[in-house]
Length: 222
Image 1 (cartoon, helix red, strand yellow):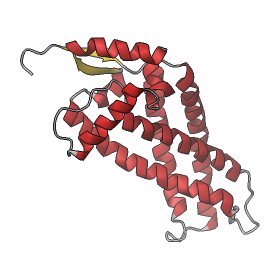
Image 2 (cartoon, one colour):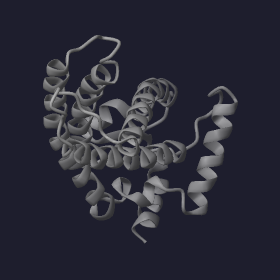
Image 3 (cartoon, one colour):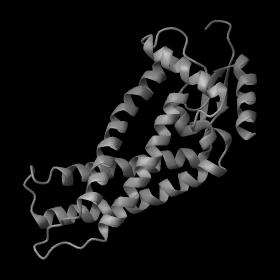
């Protein structure tokens, strides 16, 4: 570390950072309420209680739908490091970074971490998949909400709708449970301030990496 000079480089613009925490909050709320509904039989909830929790679940889904829609739009009009061009490994440089990342993981995260600016290529693929599942979750949730309850107060939506929604719940829950420790691991191993960067937007790089950052930014713009 001695003798090295470092720079703070803005990777994520304010709107992306706001949407990250906005969507994060409502995803946690929805997962919590959805978990209660998922295990309502085991919890022995009455139909009236389940219906009340469902209403809160639906109300929390609307702001998430708006946040996810805006983030989807921003994938196409945002700054280079916030777009789909950074998430999907379409270029050889990104595919090389993906291979180096997989090798780094295979070595037990030993040695020098692969260089990347925003998301590492593997995390980018996971992030893109997450966007798809959350969007499907929003769509199926909106459709399910249109199905009225039975006279008894119970809801019995068709399996072809409830199955993808329940599957999406499990996939998103697993993503969150993996995402948090992986972010912490990268924070400790790479020391690029990835957690605080999602607050103030800036990651830590060595001064000599500036040229690589600017070249990659220009590549994404192309």
